Length: 207
Picture 1 (cartoon, rainbow, N blue to C red):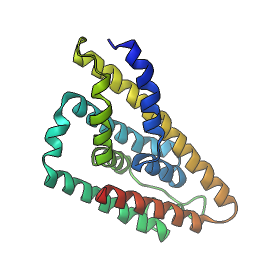
Picture 2: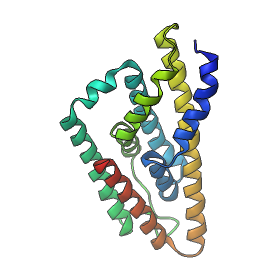
Picture 3: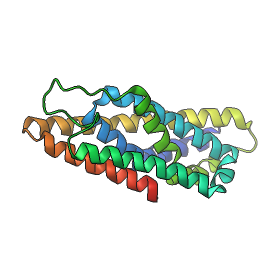
Picture 4: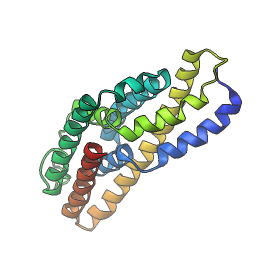
């Protein structure tokens, strides 16, 4: 049960928010480059769970309590950011499980759990994500309608829009990797992806 007049504004608003380059979209593009779109779906699943959790928390008012625990929130951000920086450095050096192998037969055995947790931590520890949902979601909730059905419908739409944007970024990253790999630039591609990953980690830790 959703106010249809609000819905006509809600969809384009949140589509533009999702499409805007950010930590999650950059991460999706990097993984599209390095492990492929299909494997990146595991990261997307974790990211969508995190985004859903943040959206529900913001809509229910829990976000305020979360932001009142700055030490716990900061520790979560720093740990997640440090891990992404580590992965980025390894990729830049063409080492580690996420680096693109020099040979087509090279193994990429990063686990599904690692990808899931990576997406989840990046979404939940993103302070800008919390700020967006706290600012943008409540105005689309109609006080005259039941909260739970409205929140469920809106969060479902947010996750659908988010997934579409993640797929766009991952596909773009995969296309870029194919173009560079054809020119024998695998090492350069690893350095580009690694630099982006380090940037996402620093963004997460310092944002």
